Image (cartoon, rainbow, N blue to C red; front, side, top):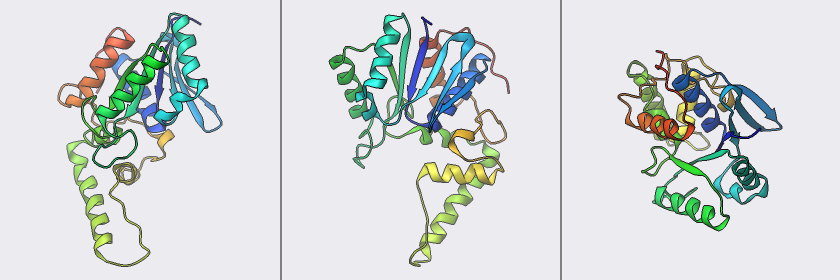
Length: 226
């Protein structure tokens, strides 16, 4: 059971997206394992495991950092993905700079060995949804625009007790549902090219993600199938 690559991520959106990207980038197939509400994804051929762990504060949980310690002792590699969130909104991980600092401090204090990548592009504030919006194909952008306009229209009624949202995670859910696909986080399929444009050459954020995975997963590259 040695030489595994463990990928720890925040939630099901990250989990499924990373699994689908690894499948596309490297022509691998994965298996899902579910225990309670948590899902783990395994690529047995290359000994890669993606683990859903919740927010950054859960790194303090011995269950997770002991997995990192144990995997390191077995000559494994550990990779962590979290949202940067926003410094100006003072929410979540409080922006890229603060999130990066928290991870570096935790790594040093616990003497852990891991690499990390912060959504959306490992340099800016934001979250994984900021990347996903950029993957909407040009011919489907009109759908997403309509959804945003609709939410503004509802807000503009001025009526009480009506719901509207401008949160990207909710707008993306509406987009997927409108495209006649399952919008539940764990049931999404980012390999479906009629609603997602996985173009590593022209979408710089996606190219950066692939470069990071190329370095740290060290899997032989395969042509990306369209």
